[in-house]
Image 1 (cartoon, rainbow, N blue to C red):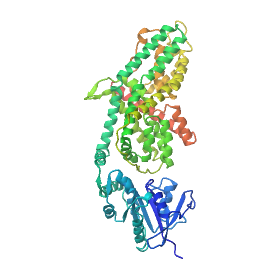
Image 2 (image 1 turned 120 degrees about the vertical axis):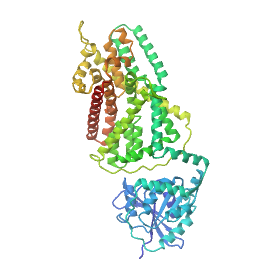
Image 3 (image 1 turned 90 degrees about the vertical axis):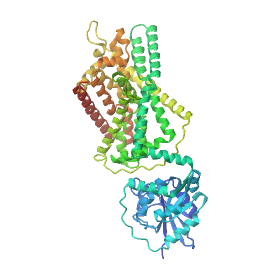
Image 4 (image 1 turned 180 degrees about the vertical axis):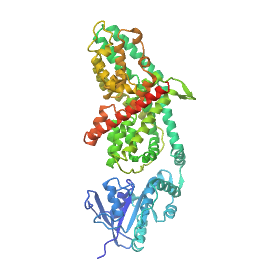
Length: 619
């Protein structure tokens, strides 16, 4: 008995394959699993124009014939005739989303390289028309060399034409021997798909043409990265230029609150607790809230306008060069807010080695907790002067620190993907959203939520860490007449003195070594730790008490030490929450220990090189 012809539905996820399968087979369906793997097998029966029955199988959606999951592996094996219990399909129906041709046609090109009889179902043409696209199936068919049929699966439009083409394919003779896969690279296929999409699109609305015109710049291989760097540079310039007035206002409130606490409390531990611990300690971090909100204002704006997806697309090429999947971009982007949700977002990466690499480099993304540290050091040691029209030196240094973290992450990824996490990267495919004006209500809500998160951290982790440090700095007190400073005599000071034996070669002093310990709870605690340390060390010295934290740092640190401290914070994994979530996501302590070890090693070496280079340069 001759087996029924086998036709396979193939396409990217969300192309409408399941809707087309249901429309073609109706109730004549059965479900099961492929032999040897728990991946759903959906098959059904359809009738050709002459009534002959055909077995139709709906394959799992995939972006490539290079699989990154069991579902995608099944699709590849069925198409190649390697799946156990399946024979090579007699014909393929390549289902394409008509409104997203460029991404879907790239996969079509990869499948057509196999030489199997195929017809392209240009699905959801009604939605493409709604979005302002007028398509020519005939032009696309001529360019691809295979039949192309317009369909609307959910409305059962175009099915007769599709069955006609399938009948012709199946009657065309024996299935040809599969040739070797074409040697086009991912980037070459993507460029070819872009050209094919232009051929297929014969008309567009003005708004869509405007989007395409903007994207010709935003996604250009040279102009696009320059635009992205320009936007990031503007963002970091604004962090300083726009925050001066609100920071000064908050500093004024903190000073008035400190004066009030001094006036209402007697001299002693209670006054020291309120002024040195709470107001000077926690307040030194809260003062940077305006800068954090400015940073997130830009991030929210880029997301709301639709540009952030374009940035992900641009970064994909760079990430592929260091062995990272494009799917890693979103988790890494999330890590600019906080590494914890960034690491959790790696669950969307199916390849285990790819996911592990992304987890291990996520702490190198400059999270918002580092901003107070950067801001106080840059404000104290980098002159607030212009180095060009509209370009401030302080913003330039901040921009360099963020870029340094990104470059460091890419270099580490390159090493990891060639050593402990060997593997091949997969390209990123995504749909480009329309450009749109942001809703100001959404921007305001996002800023409010970010402010509440920051203030909650200030009221919990930072507050508790600062108070513990204040207690360790306050006890024991030096005896009367002792020439040892209160900090040097305290328990915390003695611990820091021991630690500084290790840190002194890279230019760190006792106060920095002291601040690094509580900063393990949260990076911004380093600022409150320094503020508390210098506040207690000032004692009753009115001149020192009136100085800001930046002025005290400038009087106690050299410029090489300050630069080394900044570089340390670019790389050091000073956040217990990040270590804890890494342990949970990797199911053990092996990789968190590896992450902490390599990050501390890089931080130590980088800070040391920075310090000794600055000293040699006479800074």
